[in-house]
Image 1 (cartoon, one colour):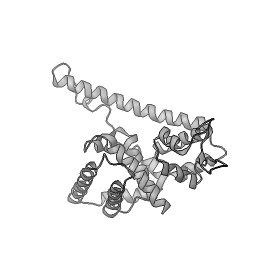
Image 2 (cartoon, rainbow, N blue to C red):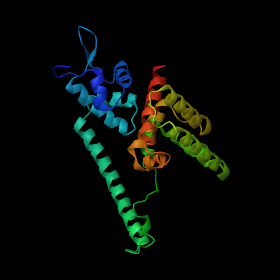
Image 3 (cartoon, rainbow, N blue to C red):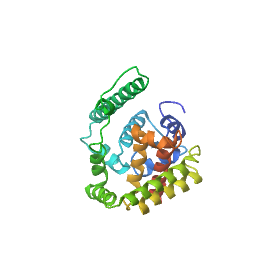
Image 4 (cartoon, rainbow, N blue to C red):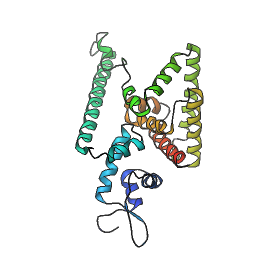
Length: 254
């Protein structure tokens, strides 16, 4: 396309989003490009692409599309401040990963007799004292949802928790078998529908479509999630993230 405008296909290729997702953003008023007067096709300006970049930053932080729309429409919204907050988040995550990499390297050297570690040093970089996403979850889905989820899991016996783990293990093994499929395909979406139903029917009915999509974002945003899921097959986390977002978008449209 000539000039400073891009068509929907070009924006999809630039951003990695599907054309369907871009159409959905337009329909809900999140990202509304101008229309070509002659043929009615969508035309995205440089400003539209800047807005799309901001939308995707928020999505990577687990924000729902509805919340992103409200944030961006707020006259007090500060784009530079939003980027600074994202930068701080990534720096903290980078520091945590670097600390764990150092521990891993020293552990390997210790195994080879090239180094020695104290018992405390073996666990440097690990921190399970709190859930780093709990506060974010509370902001996204409300205190009541998180408390119910926590109470639901805490109420289960050891045997029931093991059964839940087995169910998840079998689920992710089946999903890994189709990880090379197009996330938008009927095969993938049918599998994600089963995943959504398993999560809600077996684990307490706590996942809205928005929270389900946000969970998919976490699968790729956090290395711990990615590593655990990709242990079933390289690339599974990325596949699930895209397929879960597509599923949420489709169901919302319906």
